[in-house]
Image (cartoon, rainbow, N blue to C red; front, side):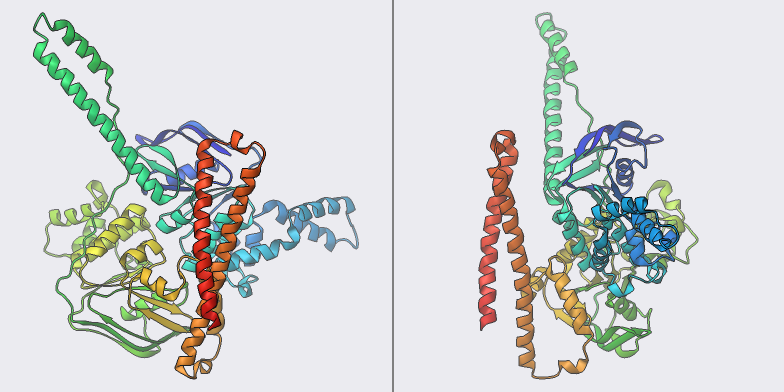
Length: 639
């Protein structure tokens, strides 16, 4: 249990939050949300005891074991990946290494008493299966077993951060503090992390800008806004509605009080000078004094105003790709890619990390050469590109934010340029910031300002949401919905994909699935949620196995292949449905056990009892639907 009492934090004259009191309990999964710079990471560091509040206190049990996601992979570069993960559980790792050291010198100096002590620690912490557990976590985060004994230095930066995340998860902490854990994760790994957190028995606090992740994981939301921290019950969608209702209620109360004061003041102004009404007027003055109006702090959330438009429409044929292949050394990432893009398409390219999504975008932008195949842009195409590592677009600039954007629109006045910058939240002295010193979110907003003034008729966006806060992501979705050009984008943010895509290109190790429809229609057609259910993991494993097979195995009758594929899809969906039924039935059994416990209804608040009854009803309904689907799949497989 972690308790915050009258918590406040100031930086100079700036107040981040004040008067915040709440309690974090075991089993709760708390999403920590707020605008960039509002104090989310500061608050997380306070929970961990890494930063002191300006006022108030945070109390934690003395022996509470904390799991904190750090970014310090540099000190582990030469160590085997599996050992980096296992070292996260300091008590167990120290006992295991000391035990090995005792055994190494057993022939000359065996300390039996000390050996018995460390052996008890290893056994009590389930140390003999620890390496296997650490390996499972690494595999869940997309790092295969054949790499586990390699040095950390062999991995790219994003995968090194996955190892640090695995290190925290393997440490078996009582409380988890995770700052943007989904950054650098692909869709399969995000889903695995969601499942891990759903099963995690301790208290978890997570900072994330991923709407779907917050909805799937969180039981509560901690909102850093209006110069305080407010605790809401429910997931992100529930929080959003509740917050809007709270604000509307407070504004209505203030409006009512202002109207009441105005009426009293009108009476005072009218009758103050009349002897017959002077006493009543004085009474009204006293009532006005008692009707104090509480100042509502301004929200720290700021929404940029992104706007994208075409300088002129493109031709009907936007892009034609034929037989494009690309390898890096012995690793083939793209093989025989064929794609025809038409004007107005909104193509989402999805698939696991390392599968070739960004490579495909770099090829069509001319940043990489193909090994085989061709691609051709259509007539009157003016593409605008947002790179995944978008700092490469700013790398050559030594100037300021204003000078960088001015160079993109020569002939425009200083006032016009500053107006464009203000739309993306650069105002006042902020326009004089050096481009090289910008944060990831600031750099992304600046590039979007450049795309706005370029007026491209094709937008190519590679992971555009990575460094944006929730407000900027929502603003970007709104702008892209209004954009009348052609859109090609890579994203792992499922909420983002579902709001924008009209066509899905899924890249797997051995094939392309080009589906002409929205993301929801794609899910309905494919029978599984590639970005959001257990099938993603199963499917990825099967795809990897299939990718290692020879292409010669894919010859044969097309009709038979289609039937075989359908049977495999049905079998996969059956596994997912079965697992979901078991999970739901297990939860119902847990609730029923609670109901049967002596004194439960006398000792439990009515609100919690009603919530459990409602949850049980929903679960029963879900089980019935799943069983109907299970029976249908069984019937289809029997045909």
